[in-house]
Image (cartoon, rainbow over the protein chains, first blue to last red):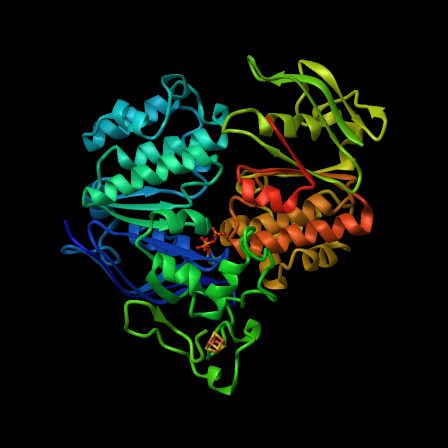
Length: 300
Length: 202
Ligand SMILES: Nc1ncnc2c1ncn2[C@@H]1O[C@H](COP(=O)(O)OP(=O)(O)OP(=O)(O)O)[C@@H](O)[C@H]1O
Ligand code: SF4
Ligand SMILES: [Mg+2]
């Protein structure tokens, strides 16, 4: 098994008259036997980063940097190479909004069995591990509840037993018992030596299963470190605000709005919302190089 | 009051049987229950989008007679779903999606401010924005006709903690201004504890 080495990855989208800087200079390593959670405000670029790793970006996207998985650079690989050797085999993806990714005219069973056949996995076992009952499998996507559709997507991603799993909001619409079941399954995978990148809004889920948490803001990683430290002793003012916004904590939003990704400030992108901002924040802070890293001139 | 009385509803077979529930003006009622227990089905019945097999829905004392497209009383109820992507026409810009229930686009700016959507985002189509940004547009659209009741079906499952707190704040401010009642459906007990005045379990 091999590391995923994301090195200075940026993704831009060309729109009419503007460029969206969706992912900016992101570096992150995920080792076998490790679960890293990527958290951050809606629209901060998490899904775009995942899509870049699997070659699922739309035509108006431009990437730079590299993402190595063993000897493959995922950003340089051709679509054919990704389709035949990477997707489902080396990397399993649980996409966000799974209901919209299922084929509407085929039952869950037929989709799962076909994928199992192509990848050489066991459809029945994958369904069972995802918490699906045989009667769920005979339904068409529009007959599945949100939580069932999510479990079908989870089974599809795991059926080929890929060493790296990227899960984009896999707990959406699941009740607590199913969330716990899914997180336990991730933990088992990790303990078996798989690597998991968990993209989530659910800080409680991140806390439960992740070894490390990376916090993203405006396309950049602003803090990364051991899960409990990042949640309970956040160093970046944004990460601190996010943790405090939880319903079991203050339940207050971080004031202001994230910056337009078409018009990012030259300095710290959080400065307009940051109580601690001073003149030095007009220079862009760089991510420190320690086990609990932060990109901030005046960390908490 | 928005009331469901002895509602039995489902698809080929019933998924909820004899369920009654009341949302008073100004009140926020939480609705919890395991995956597949029929929370969304009840939400669709209360939103007049799905005809129950038996039972009635009353809005402010008036019994509902038509469900689905002919529903005359439907403008009194705003709805937000879990998957914003499935509820917005992919060809529309967010501006047009928000204006969908309105006669013109006059109030779009005001509604967009309410949910903190910037001008730049209003010109984009659903595939060019994140789910969270799209959900903000859906909230603006749901509030466009000043509904007396708002039904939020897992509205925040796509959202981060800060956006969740912000949108709940938007809804609370709307309730304070208009006295609207809210039915908040969620798997997240911690969220419902903090958000709802009382919580019902299915
Ligand atoms: N095809 C596209 N063209 C232009 N901009 C896009 C496109 N796809 C996404 N974006 C923009 O890229 C940014 C990141 O979007 P992304 O979907 O990755 O967010 P996210 O962090 O996954 O959010 P959420 O938590 O809401 O799912 C957003 O500002 C979005 O508007
Ligand atoms: S660098 Fe400055 S503005 Fe940015 S988060 Fe740190 S203190 Fe706030
Ligand atoms: Mg996303």
